[in-house]
Length: 96
Image 1 (cartoon, rainbow, N blue to C red):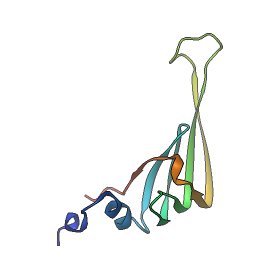
Image 2 (image 1 turned 90 degrees about the horizontal axis):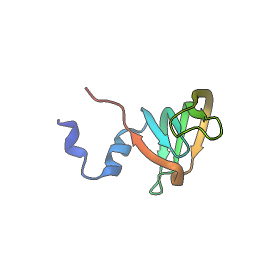
Image 3 (image 1 turned 135 degrees about the vertical axis):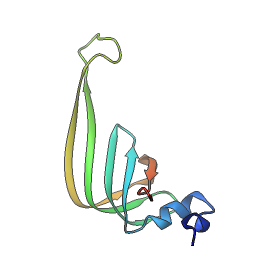
């Protein structure tokens, strides 16, 4: 059976990604990867085995945009509830 046959609307991609590792981009230069356990129509998500990456740009005062040190802070969490209003993108696992 063709896996794309069950995809008729965007939430179908999310539904097919349940119990799979997904990539989530959030507001504020934050990114998550974790196993998707649940979601709703507001894009609230419940993830487990989560790794969060936060990009921090430390620009000296008065420096032009794009000129500053960038550091990435990582942390791991067992379980995380993500509010849907902060979600920019949810990417399902690649199906090759």
